Length: 446
Image 1 (cartoon, rainbow, N blue to C red):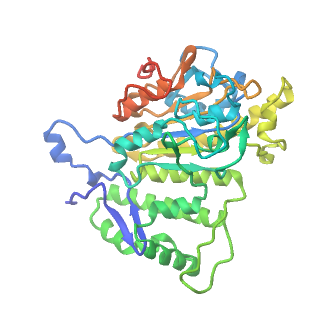
Image 2: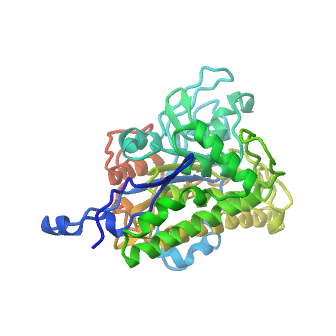
Image 3: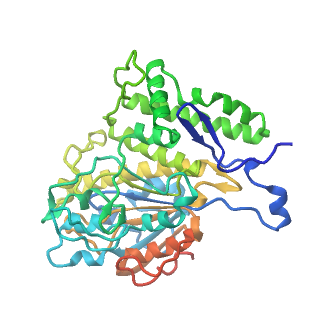
């Protein structure tokens, strides 16, 4: 008979501490059955921000109630529509304040619901973001209170919009009113952080050996992995094998995406860095890191900026050579509308990839997606009008009691932060107010 092991068990080796997925052997069947219940897996919360709004006619559902056929931009999620809650009419109403910069005011308050202070200096002021409210309460239960990720580096100086610091357009996570949290954009660094131990000296040696000798992180935990396997039943052995395979596959893709000449000697040689040149590969690696972080319960709170506010990257891989921000100021040009919709659709294909991975991972009697609240959205509706009164927002998953498979139309201008209050309730972190919230959003739980 297999013996019980802790949820906090990790595979260890030089510079390495590899968390594990939830295994059956971690769930005390006999004891919980005697109490009439079984311990539930934790609820996770993630916020994915996309820049420059959406082409709203191709985003918005035409009917309320149960989701039928999804609109064009959301078509990649058609097979997942039973997992989606689509609220219309949510807004960032304070973004209409006099003198407010378009992107700075909206991106800056996307998770805070607070109008940022107009400044180019160090006297920044915003609100505490919803992810950090959650992290402050439950972050002590995991290795990392939260993770802040992105695909484009942050900026800490300069005027990005109408006299507002670029900090506001390149950060969505705020630990305090004056402290934005920097986001990590290098997949290699995220991977090393997730699977490194707390000993910096050992981490450096481990990274150098891996680079020099083409070793995998799995080589450093092989003894622990073999010992654990002998303690597991057949089902858990299969689950562990699949998990280790996925880690190795992601590690290989990280190395390939940022391939550099490897050092041939000197164990203290700095590990090669750099961001992937392929923007799609970059985003998918960051999404994979989020899955690993949730699967191993390394954190339960993540934010990801797919692009900074007013991001102007082009997407030649889908036939769009113009910059995204440039296209968002379409002035009614139907050709630009079409290209914007194509970019929007492209982002949603990545979202579908992420949600599919969460749904494919068994956790207890359900899936990782069942235990998650994944919010995806923008700080604008129509980018040309800088419309902050009807935002493209969706929430995927059933974590926190959310009832998916529905489109609910709320009164135009309803604060987005009302939804955040309801999500925090589902996470077990009830608060009375966040930013400009007025009440908990009704009908989230059905």
